[in-house]
Image 1 (cartoon, rainbow, N blue to C red):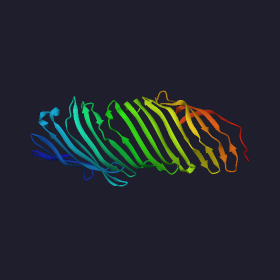
Image 2: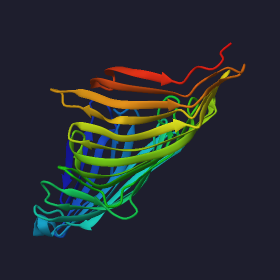
Image 3: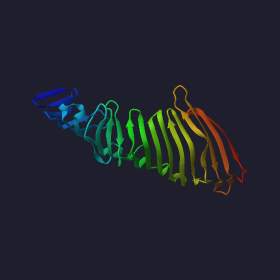
Image 4: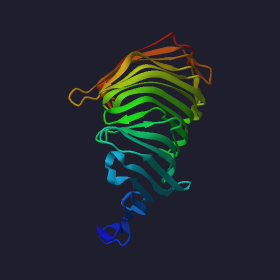
Amino acid sequence: MTLNWQQQQGTLVINQQGDDQPLLQLPWQVDAQQIRITQGHWRWPQADQPLSGGLALTLDNWQQGLENTQVSGRFNLLTQGRGGKGNLVLSVGPGTLSLTDSALPFQLTGESKFADLQLFGSMPGILHGMLTDPQITLKQGALLRLRGRLLSTLEVDEARWPLAGVTLASRGINGRLQAILKAHDPNFGRFTLHLDGRASDFWPDSGRWNWRYWGDGMMQPLNAKWDVKGTGSWQDTLISLDTLNTGFDQLAYGMVQVDKPRLTLTAPVRWQRDVAHPAFNGGFTLKSGQTQFSYGGWLPPSELRFEAKGSDPSRFIWRGQLTAEDIGPVR
């Protein structure tokens, strides 16, 4: 790190050993009214995708103390990947930072483009509260969008997160949490999923988040339309799926066609994530109509009731009972 200082201006430079290009370069000026950083640059080559950007910062009335200093600035993040180059810009101020009651507006806009994903954002908001424990409240129009390949075969046509009114603080997230996902997959076809809920002092395994979900799609390999809806919650270390209703209009594959299979809950699904007392349990009913075979045989409508019990969704045992009417002619 080097600091060049001449009268009322200078440059702060931070270099990585063996690299001539600086990680951070901040030209600065200071006078009785302002401290200014102009045309600053930064970069971070250590990430999977190199990141870089610029920054500018102005502190007005800085000699009047923190409470009376007006803060304004601009920071940007440059990325390059699928879809070309991206530029994400954070503008802050003018506003104040205070030990008791900060009020610093900000606006985050632009897009970031990575190897397989594109992220678009417009997020106006304000940082407020004590500087030692600040809160961020997002304003009307706050929205995040995502496109691209999320998994090896899952292509996200669009994912949207409306965030207006959401507050972030050390104690958790508060407000309405929504998400809309439109995607397609070679094995599952196209589908749309919605999530809508409300969080109260929520972080993973702390606080509460109630939600409801619904969606539909087309599973092309089975020539089947499907739908899903239900409700659930996450309170402290307990994740609950209170209701679930999902199924297909039919399943058709090769010589077999199953009429209207449907899965519902007979008991809520509970996943206790407490490390000392992990548990997973739930009750299910799978009903299906008549199964037809292309040669003319058929199986009658059936119902499978089963229970799952274990320590987590990857470690459980299940037991159940299958009931059906008399079997028709099978040749």
